[in-house]
Length: 276
Image (tube, rainbow, N blue to C red; front, side, top):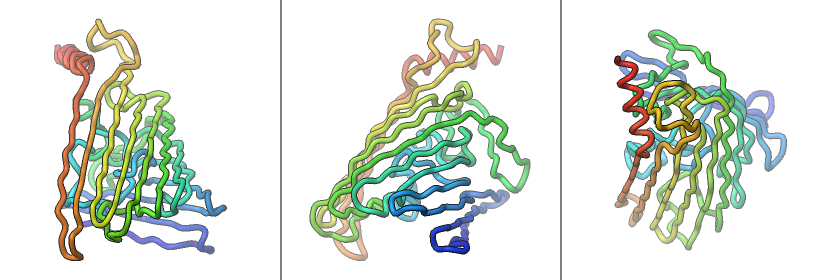
């Protein structure tokens, strides 16, 4: 169950949001931030919120075509973090869209965040877990995240379905992140992504292509891999659908994820060393 409260404080320019999620045996905080608009094209957000890396993760799950995100999306890296985000509306304005932020470097919710840790077996802290044993944010390693897109012909990028069913509309974007001191085998050192979204007369086509690099930063692993900056994961996601009536839509999704040979050799050697 997810519940939230949102509104403004003192002035419509200063908005807030507090959102929680509860499942049997667990209660944690999803969003907790303030957002101030000091110009039509400039707003500053501070607190715990989604980082501006890719549109597919910025959008809420309720605006997806499918009932849930794809499994490969759980390997993309940081989802929600504590930090500052400078933006111009998070895609709600036509034309140029941007988000750039500086964050703590540690995700607040590990479920859809620690892609490398899922593969390497590293622990995944859960600092915003209110119930049970709380693991506070203790490792501050600044991460810069940026996202730019051009949204043409008044396309609504905040939802995947083409509810308008009008003429051709499009969005093209890129995403980038860089962590200055990533945790070994747990955090991406750098991520690069490209995205597209097309809509026309009920049809939609969405594509995301991304890659993530990892930093060893310890003495374990494959001794033949000596560089600190290595290719870790390549991923792709394609999705299309047709909204033929107000009550019906058909959709198809294809997702692909591949780890690099160096990453597989490195983590296999590291696991063996840790066991021994």
